[in-house]
Length: 345
Image 1 (cartoon, rainbow, N blue to C red):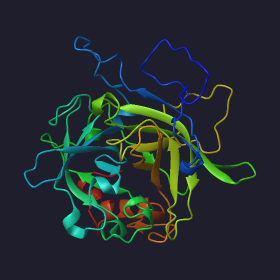
Image 2 (tube, rainbow, N blue to C red):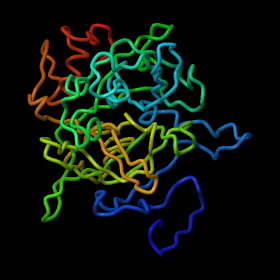
Image 3 (tube, helix red, strand yellow):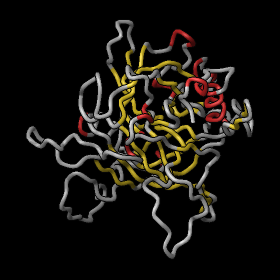
């Protein structure tokens, strides 16, 4: 284990043992243990044909790489991670779409989503690729008035959605038999207040494409408990914080609770929050030092910019807070009209 005198034996170098960053301290949320593993069948080598193969079914394949063109020539020169919460509806971090506080001029130029991306190709992946149609971002993030601990970093509302364009076959990702989409949760669904300190925590699975692991070529999975921090006001954003080995490129990847395939109950009972594969947040920030292995996320929740407990249009309740407002703006008839395009739920 990093940072301790204990030794661990492992038959595989593809997964970190239960670990934490060697430079963690009370000043950076303490030492938060995590595990990390590649989502793939084999080690990377020039001869292993299975090296780049992701798990080929749900729930992994609703996550993918989001290629970004930041300049007007349209070439993809950066990337984030993203996940599907509708047939053709992505959720990711707002900073993957817009340079905080720069208004309309701060938007990047183009985006392409590749579910379960497994190579360096910018053109496609094992299931194809989808370009963007409409982006929806929080106004407070775009105009630079969000609650953030540092300008544009660790904010209440570093979250956004994209309505994808259909591919050349007239399909959204969900038309591919292996690909589904996640649910989304809000206001701490599945979390629990623990101990006398009143710390609110969730068990989180994080997916993404960090550049510091396999050069960002292959999907990575991290698991850790995550704790809620901040008040949501002043310079104290309401965030989730978890232990993670991921870094740049993982931004926008989903933070899920109850990740995995639901078992048949044959003598056990369901937990208090049984809904499976629920996105609670998306990766927003981390430390530039690779020895501080902690990341944070803007929570899907009500806050001062999105106070409503219910964003409703046309008889559909999209939920409360930032995620409810964004989903309504994307899928409601008066917004992105994604529902009419068949991109939503």
